[in-house]
Length: 595
DNA sequence: GCCGTTTTCGGCCCGACTGTTTTCAGTCG
Image (cartoon, rainbow, N blue to C red; front, side, top):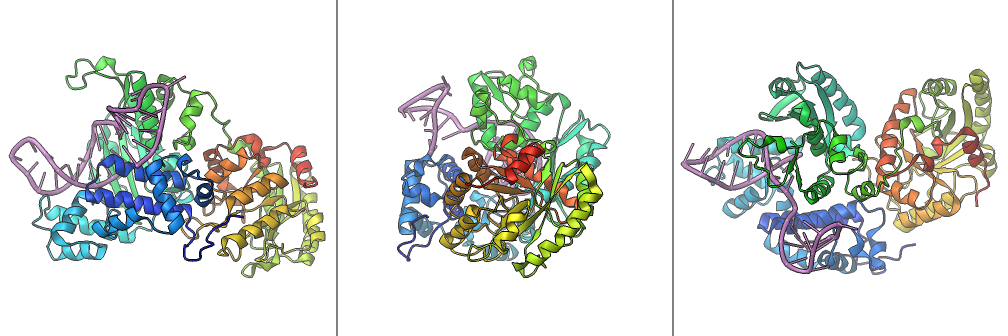
């Protein structure tokens, strides 16, 4: 267990808390007018903390802060101060100089550090409310670079900020993007169209939708894009790209490039920014400058137009990576988390595919909160080609959900048997349970019942806000329980709604590794729990991963692609995922004696 | 402020778009 907060004065800070402070420092320094690279360093350090699979407090107590990517001597000293004293002198002095609330203005679209500084110093604007008042009262009108359009843009931006509810979940963005691809793909002259950006990298949440089309003439595609019925406002419309805001506040942009340059353009637009920086470094080492348009020999005069033959055009991303001497790097890995080095060494993870998943081990029926009968779920699973389906209804302690008690489980056997009869040898139907991990760490079902079930998924549902020591101990008890095969959605997070439980993940992962208990990547797009970074650390520790859709109805099996994507982003290979195993092997594993 | 099969110092992307500009500044990705 993590020793911390012995001094009750100092609140325990999460990785996100520390990252937020660093990010705010970056914003305030930028408003102050500090050199851009110092600002970028703070943001990079914040990113490094967010990508961490370990608790920063644990790393701190080991003296390893500088091992965090983007954290060097200076930032490490500042984090140390923050974690040790709960305060950071540098930050205290900074906010005395630059009002802390100015950082929130950075979220206003089309408002950046220069204007914020101007408004602050010349008009006393320090808050969002103050900005709105200043615009409305015309106080900003006479400032340099301001005009009527800029005023209107600020009011628009403020309204848009108030409307926007943060980032979209992958599961919401994907169907929307597919619809857009279909519509825009049908536009005359569009030869190809793809999603790009964080959506193509299958990040768990997406800020806006990036689309990229290949066409010789960009005008038609861009015109169709800004004329989409769901467009509320056109934010920009140029020769090669346009950006819009939909009626629901979602923002989207479309780039159009010639087909011969589609590869570099797609690579560029997919990012991540840091991955692209790595690639450009490699390109430069080869005497090439990489842009969205082409690979251009350094020194090549782009201005005179007479020497254009020297450009290397790439119609596909394969060609871009090949030109750099690298194998294709799948988009999900492009986060600058070591994938470029792995590509160089030809050591990229084996790619997990949806088709590798043969078993679904966490599913519900009408016996708890599912919408379909056991047989309906089984038939749907057969249709999708699964070899094994486990029905794992909730145990009773959930309160809101009508779950099963011991008698209910026994009664359910009859229907399981009937369903097995009906499906014959078309699928292996397992009788399992999703047993609740109660607030005290005990399981909501007698051991003798659990012992007889084919699969036991143990999940936390209630009291997720317990203090770290308590909720961690609770999970550890479940992990060590002899009959628990899989821990379902281990942190209990709901994207955009509920923060993950304050778990000591080091302890959780160590216990899972020691006992051979599998950890779930829950593919429900509201959860995606474990998150990619933890999944990656889990497989490094030899922990078995189970990817499950937690289906409450047949169509929920479609969530599988999100779970698989999360696993890929965690560098998980097929072998580490028990759902990919041959049936005999998986059944033997489920029937094993735990250590 | 970070980082290194290109460096312990000198890089760290730069082009598109908009609005205010008569030649450029700010923002964004």
